[in-house]
Image 1 (cartoon, rainbow, N blue to C red):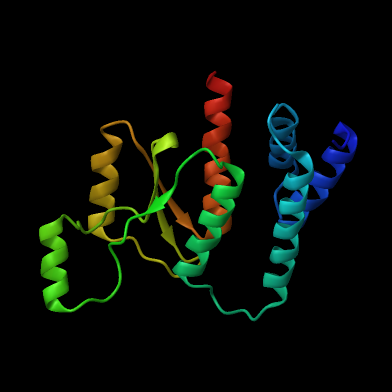
Image 2 (tube, rainbow, N blue to C red; image 1 turned 60 degrees about the vertical axis):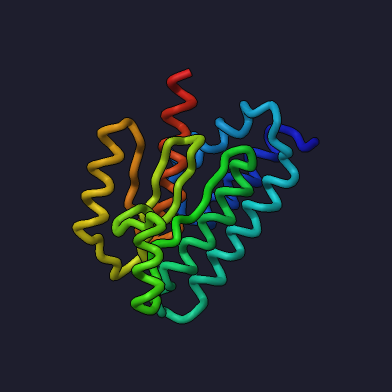
Length: 177
């Protein structure tokens, strides 16, 4: 296992490359230093790969990534970071024939349901692309409905925004215990 100082330094560099501010970097580092089950070597490898990914994305064209790409990155990060907490997609979007639409409505598909759900965190995540996403009235109605029952709902404008919001929620939960 790597030492605390080597872990802190490597994690700080990787988080800095991902444009995470110093205050949040310190919180994240401390959280993972305090974790008795974290495999530090694997975690550093993952964060370094995320840093490389962020640098590559910067060099890539200025095109705005699709909501699908942003959501796929979030699910990948979430499952690596919280392997014991489930996250799954609600398949409400997309194109379908009129017959398929009718069948899906009969099956229970409901407009406005958030894109992702993490039951362990009682968290619904509505993903949008980093720039240009629009929230519908049905999505706001869904948010208002689930929040009255104690669920959390976040609107995430891209992977980075979702990741930051989730880390804040997890940090608040850790501080409550």
